[in-house]
Image (tube, rainbow, N blue to C red):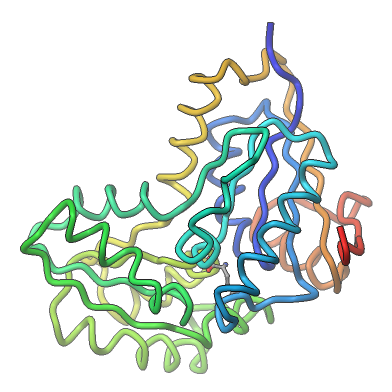
Length: 272
Ligand code: DGL
């Protein structure tokens, strides 16, 4: 018998939608409850204590929605709040480890770039895990702090000179080091893939954490017998802590799905 409860997914804002998109491709029948903490975005410039506290609150909100599995679709939470899964009554999937394995598999010259938020890069999570799997790898890290507000603002066109110049500034050290693979270590960043390719060339492999994570979700649902057995397409519901209208507009573009039908609700998770 299938488990018809929804998969719970959270991020600080819009970024986690890049993970939602990949999960929907592999699991179109599953219901999804998404929480974007748009009232407190960005997480990546905050302290470890604050990030951990926010992650716990996001999880509690999703648990109230009776989800069967939680995905931290946020590179910052996955890197910094390493105990985010502790005590959870449902399985938990983070986004870092799966993307590191994909990068290690993809690189040919063993030069890997890692782009993330300031908190993610400070944590060294990707570097540590890459070197565990590939001890002679060269890892070039950079925190691309301005990418998050660009995406939240809906500025991600590869034809926009502001976008291209911002991307060039953050990517130049990786171009200089001749990395052949870049981990987009923040879930907001795949939205800028086209601009990044424009700046770095088509030959570089960009690792979208959503792709590797979606496979991990499939595997985890199977392992715990949690997959739905429904045949029809799942229902996707979205909750945000602020600015529902702008979320709705940009999310519709990112997901290629019209969300202007009451599926985005603003909620207050303070003191949850
Ligand atoms: N999308 C998030 C991440 O993957 C967080 C960006 C932010 O809130 O700073 O890191």
